[in-house]
Image 1 (cartoon, one colour):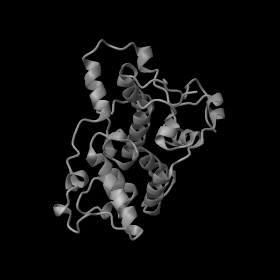
Image 2 (cartoon, helix red, strand yellow):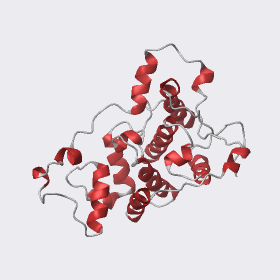
Image 3 (cartoon, one colour):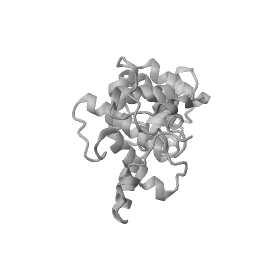
Image 4 (cartoon, one colour):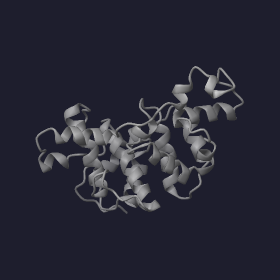
Length: 242
């Protein structure tokens, strides 16, 4: 049973830069008590908490319902918070929102692919399959839209929870492209214009560089160039909007 205290599961409806700059980091800090750049992810349990907090923080940065942006129902989000972030409390009236995600076909196909290749038991792998599939329809590199710090963290996440699927990406293809190519191959469809990847005109789309600065690192750098934010503003990061 959730200990009902004053933690509103809301997020500011606007995704303008002035609010977004601090929302992701503040949400991550609210969940974990640390900045994403400073967290210790040596063991698998800490890494899972980091990955989940990162996805929720990235979803919060987008504005609107975090449960929808993260690919979870409000009940699933509440259970996830209870299991992995027990210090975060939920107001009882927020649970009355009862948001149910209504995934499109693309999200469902990627989710089912991941679920069929799970290598860990329990709720975490199932939630991650849903969250990864939902975030995969966002426009950036997948690791960026999951709020992770680099592609290596995404590879570790997939190796841990979806090992057999991750092991099939022997040529280090971009993960979104790999998911869709795998779906087509499993259905007996051929989507590539050439049989050899290096001869394909879309080679850079599938195997191009995925380095860069994480979304929350960008926001941290921008914030350091501005005036300090009052503590009340930092902790206004919220996880759902009415």
